[in-house]
Amino acid sequence: MKISALISDVDGTLVTPAKILTERSQQAVAELHRRGIGFTIISARPPRAMTMFVEPLSIAMPIAGFNGGAFTGPDLTPIENHLLAPETAQRAHDLLRSKGIDVWVFSGLDWLLIDADNAHVVPEIRVVRFKPTLVRNLEPALASAFKVVGVSEDHDLLARCERELQAALGEQASVSRSQPFYLDVTHPLANKGTAVARLAALMGVPLAEVAVIGDNHNDVGMFAQGGLSIAMGNAVPDVQAHAAVVTESNDREGFAEAIRKYILDA
Image (cartoon, rainbow, N blue to C red):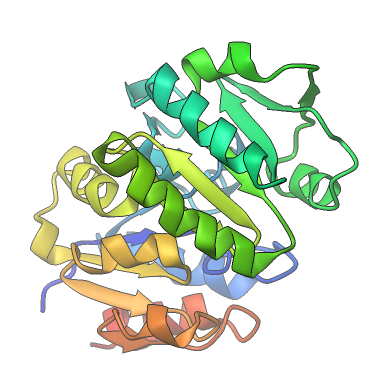
């Protein structure tokens, strides 16, 4: 199988559980570049929270934030945006709040929330490297939202809400968990399956020659798109089952190992 590009998820895949980009991962991507194999990243993160990887990984291709809700150049020059319809964002917000689930809204460059005491706020600040904006009312931001996020430590509740929102919103939104504690609602085109196909087109690479790698439920869509799908060892079994191969976990250099074993030495 000819591989001309690798498109990688970020959290749980490219970085360690401590959100560290290891030297071995950087070396693996550098070897891809030397062999003429393209590389870029896709994430539920905002694009501005992905720029920290551009220089160490020499990313020159477009990147996809918000699961494909925002395509930008590596310098954040906008390429293509997909915002939620205001009424869809409102319905998602209302359903999540009715279940007692905290809601975050990503609108423009801003991360907006009402309750800064949520246990995930401080860790998320470390991840995205910018602070949220505290507001009394999220509804104005719902008119121009890239992503509405339900945040809860009750993982079973969030899984039930995922199914409920998928049924309620249908084709009006893409609904998936990016982490056990995050439920993301984005534009229907902002899903990793559609986004990987778009990235391949922007990179000028046939989709059949694209390898993809990820670890979570929202990565399953891209497993069906690429020519080679790689699941991380830290992925749950039902995510791994959708991939062609499984590498080591992200605390055991699984990303770098996958590049070596399935792309460079294949």
